[in-house]
Image (cartoon, rainbow, N blue to C red):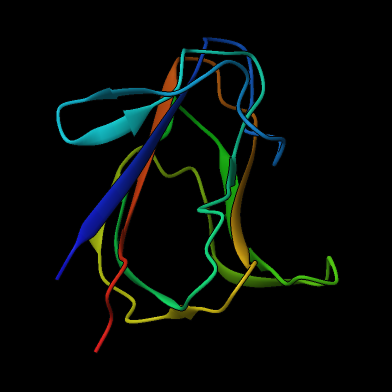
Length: 126
């Protein structure tokens, strides 16, 4: 197993809007951490091989509606998970395989405080 984690943070009064994170990632605490921004939510692992989704950790700010979608290479989106008024969702293991070029996309509405999202994949699935 070879794990890879990407972390994105959003400032208070901003939303995950499914856009790519701004700024270069810094490798810290065994994860790729993007600078806190006002947009983000697109998790692109730039994978040439299948990846297994191992963990999703999110902490949404206050009352919010959210969705996590799989974005296919032809930009077709499939909602995997969604919820409302969630303030914390942790350690959700889906066992989903991301095929070459597929991405994951978080979108939130109504959040008023800072948010964080981390997604971990196994780069060598069985």
